[in-house]
Length: 347
Image 1 (cartoon, one colour):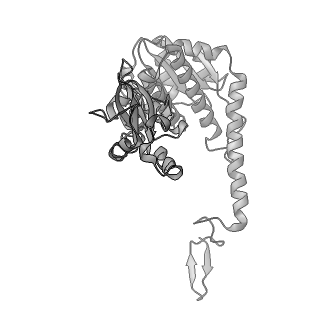
Image 2 (image 1 turned 60 degrees about the vertical axis):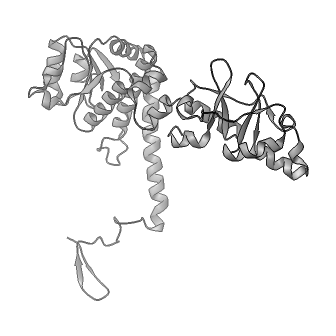
Image 3 (image 1 turned 45 degrees about the vertical axis):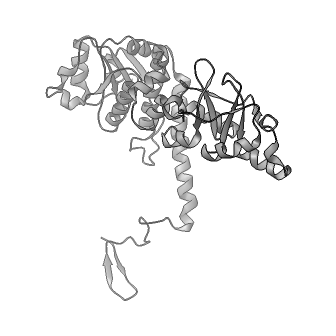
């Protein structure tokens, strides 16, 4: 153990001589730290790009197996590859392909019972020689379960797999070429590629995603409709023959947006608080000005069945705070405000 002398002459054991290894990097080290981080990202990025360059028909074969799976996709791996396998299983499940993670050691102690005859397996291993995978691989092949291997071609795993996806990398990003870094990133990217290809092949849509993600921001963005958050009950609208004097109270009561409608409640325009402010600046006798001279004609509108997130994107794109909402007959039935969409969690 390293010993240092303090300014008071006492020896302090166990403290690195430079004081480094704790807290912030010293100023002279900061550029080196950034350079090392950049090197890791570049190396891992090149590893993923190399996968894309050598992707071939085996990938299509794997997608065929996964799309045609009548049971579940059983994904397995050990160590860091096991963590990647868990992520692949989770991504498949959340995008419409039922999948589960099976730890190969647990499989040897009773969990092999979860594997069915209509399942497909994905095994993840950098070397393809992982001892713990061999008994599981033997069980799968004896049972006629197709195996997609994310591994090194020529390995024991590759020799017994139905389809082999080459996930080899030239080197790990670890300076000692030991810690799984580039290899796990490559395997994870390959798993994502499989999941997305299967998703597209199955025609998995945003509505399907919403059904499987009812909670959280993702679910709200894909499920909350304009009708769920709009102000609907007796929303004040003004006829086209009204004056700006008639707009004052409705603008204050309804958060700065008043639709202008014809006799059939078809929206012909919108007056906002900003319109009123600009009019006051240039016209002293603004109260008598007809609303048709001030309103925005043919304004952007929303429909009750529109997703709230879609309405919010329109508001943000055109710099407005609210949209008139139309029913199936194109009649005004309410107004949806950006703040209400924010409170509903769709932004």
